[in-house]
Length: 336
View 1 (cartoon, rainbow, N blue to C red):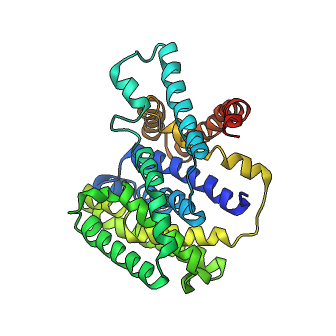
View 2 (cartoon, rainbow, N blue to C red):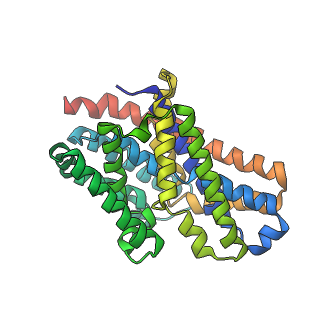
View 3 (cartoon, rainbow, N blue to C red):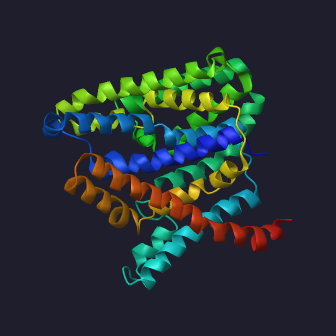
């Protein structure tokens, strides 16, 4: 049974991911010159990035909170949704004459190119989840707690602070997802004291952490040190992980249930699959955002960029309707 408050968080997180991609991913991080000439815009960009950066971790946290138990049916549904968008978009671009049949395009359908890191990392997590769940069932609380402490200490020192353990890949990896998954299961099962705060405390902590992250990024921007900026915005930054935890905990304490929101949330992954598709993202998402940012000022620029974000969200939800119909009408019955 889907919970309205978690489904609202799911929608909020995917919207934040689109905003994340419309911010520094599309416009690049500000440097010294931009900070000096447009300090308000530059700091606003950093603040938006700081608020949104925890959204990817939240999706993994949701999986860990409920404890994923992959089945042939659920895995097939996920694969069908992925292929529905990758094949559909690729064929559409060919029919529209903006693409041709080529090896790179075919390989991109099953993510054998540099695109689609999240899907590869998440699918491998699903493959490993039965092993993780077995450990969770059999480990005692003390062992589980120390595993998490050592994992996050190792990741923070070797995978983030000094970045010498490249397999963490700034949190863009299955091993980082494993840490988030286990952390969520631990909090759900054992309810440590910090998880019992009132909801407004959770939200306050999240806001304070996002302000701290914004402040920390200003100095490397002043030095035009792009490496340090992106290091601070890495998914395995402990500040970002804590933000994910407390924003998630805030939503768990909301009393909310709405069938419309639950239905919308079922298409949240479709929003990712549409705007992050390699045949769309650079040319039809990033490029127009850059154009409006460079050619319009202030509120007008923000309005156009917001419109692009809204269009992609609405389009994905609409395009996902036939996919859900095909799955429920023709494919799902085969698993019964």
